[in-house]
Structure formats: structure tokens, C-alpha cells
Length: 280
Image (cartoon, rainbow, N blue to C red; front, side, top):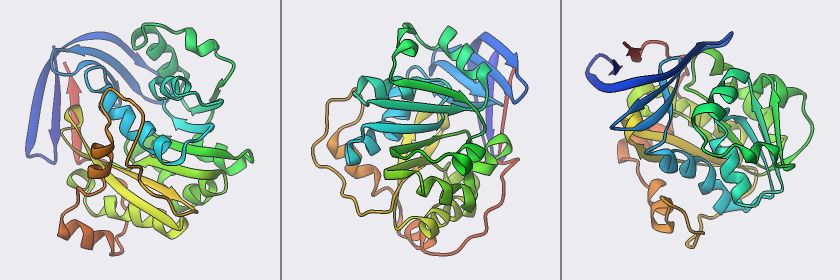
């Protein structure tokens, strides 16, 4: 069996794998596979979300970076049903970790196959709700020090969380810093820059950054957004992957041409065919 990745018709990578679990939930296709190259992977609708070999890069870039900038005590995680980021936040000592995940099957399978120890789910600081993230932030009033948008690519069931209204709603709920994944300009083209600029139209201070994640096969986009000015730290805690120098460097990984495109207006279009995956 192999997992085959094709991007934009010009790059194809086939990774031998063994299927660990496969479920078709009411929301998406969920597969967990074992690979020599990437370790154990959670794949949602064909998209690699987590990789045991590279989980430190995936989650420290999305969770530890904003943590080190704003030192929160509470966090709202939108998505993140694998609970790897939630566990990291508990390990960092946050007093309140709230996860809003659409699909209970993602949580159930992740606890069965991605965690060696599931005792953390009984931690009183952790709250898991099953709800639509866009609807949740539209109706919810509780404020958080940090919000993490840990969703799949801006297409399909996640497309609503990349709307201007969603961003405006999160702005009203975050006192400190929001960190969101926003795919990659190599994959979604101008729509990547549109996402960044859409956040800039809502938040007063936005800084995009990028990180190389091998299972994603590209420099993947992230961004920090806040109503308040913020500085990148020069000293951080001890992590398995993230260092202070690496944190600083990730914010400088844009060419002159990309910097120019970040300053322009781009129309966002949902991407449905730039990537193709298959397991078989």
C-alpha cells in the first residue's frame, strides 16, 4: 500500500505505508497510516495533518511560537482534534485549554492511535466541545489570551473559517494573540496572500511566517495576528524543535516578490484541485 501525493500536476511523491485505521465520518474521510518516511500520520480527506516524526515542527510552530510571544494562561483551539496541540498547551502550564472540534471521530481515533498516554483528557483544565468553529466564535462571548486556528486547508468543511466575518469574530474573543495556519503560496497562489491581507483588514498587527514541514512538501504558511503591537522574543523556553533563532528566522522567509505580493489585494478563491492524494 502507498500514499500518493500530487500537487498542481507537477510534483508526485509516493510513500509506502501501512493502514492503521480508516473511518468515513459524517464530515470527512479519516485515515491513519504508518510510514517509514514520516512515522504515523493522521490524514483527513487525503491531507496529511500530523506526522509523528515531524509533530514537533508542526505543533511547536503553530502553538509554541504564539505562546512565547504572549505567554498566555488561556487558549481557544479551533480544530486541533488530534489533541496534540492541546496536550502541548497543558504541558506548558496553561490554566484553561478549550478545544472546539467539528468531528468527534477525529478525537476518538487520535486518542486510540496517536497518543501513548491519554490521561491528559481527564485534566480539569481541558475542555473539549464538538461544534462548528465558525458558528462557535459567532455566538461565544468568553475571551481568551490566545486563539489557535488549527484547521485543515481552506477548502471543504474548513472554508468558512477563512472568511472575513470569522476573523472579525475571533478578534472580539482574543486579548493577546491569534495564530492561524494559512496554507502556502506554492499551493494556493494569490489566495494565500489574500488570506494574509484579509487578516490585516481585521487585525491591527499581522505578521506572516513560514515553516518547512517535510510531509507537507513545502514551506507552509502561518501568521500571528493581534489588536496590539507585539515583539518576537529573543529568548524562549526549551523545546525539542523550536529555538529562538529559528523563531526569528521563520518570519524572514519571504522573497522580495512575495513581500510585494503581500502588499497587494488578491481575490480569494476556494482551492479544490491544486492537490490530489490517494491511498491504495
